[in-house]
Image (cartoon, rainbow, N blue to C red):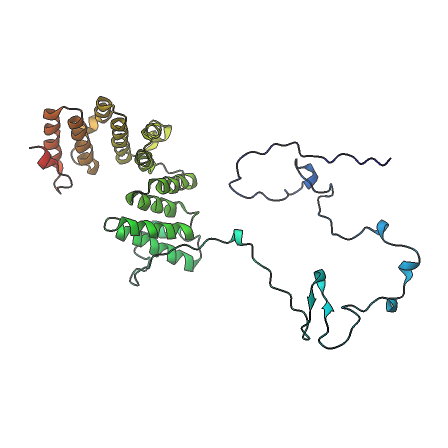
Length: 328
């Protein structure tokens, strides 16, 4: 009795998660048979579909004269007659068979997105040179489109955050591998209140560049999504030690807000209690004093809160806050 060997299985369980990028089918210098889970023949090459020489017919049939074989394309020579064509298809076109064009794999096509209009007077040259330099890896045409979208983000960030967000989506669609583009798209989404999208974009920017300056915004996105504990985890991570002073202060403010979200009002005040409260000539000093005064007020320490609102108003020369009113 002819016994066939059992079919080999790879024995390797599925990882349960998709790969972030497609792996190459073979590695240089290695045959496919050395890879676990391979179902290819040991030669490493797919079968050509032709019978091997050992399985070809032999004997009289092999010596049949060529004229005994049917003519290629069928035996009929009438104009317009149906002719046999490749893959078993038929064509009655007297001009000959024209194969159908190859159909593109729709799953590999990038989905079309809505792209907001860009004013004609926006050229992209308005960007800083350092930002334009990061776009040099793109084609000239694509770089110009992305640059113009980035300019529109800056134009509409304050006046129309939702429109700025749409420009951010378009820019990321054209240049999703550039950190500066993903970061800009993340900030635009954050200002528009799309915290989930902002978090995704900022995480991508961080993975690409390793920059931690967006860490406070990422933590505030977690707050916006109702996850204050995750915000505190970010605030307590090792990356915070790498923050510059302005971002460090912003992280303190976000962490204090997360404490308030958890109902830990005294801890919110303690989080903002630092020597930097004495600073007067830095841009972040106004925000720090205002956040500290606000935390005191929420904690029920009204007199201290009014005192610090007044100290905030003293350095808020541009009246960026309503500290003067709340100091009354």
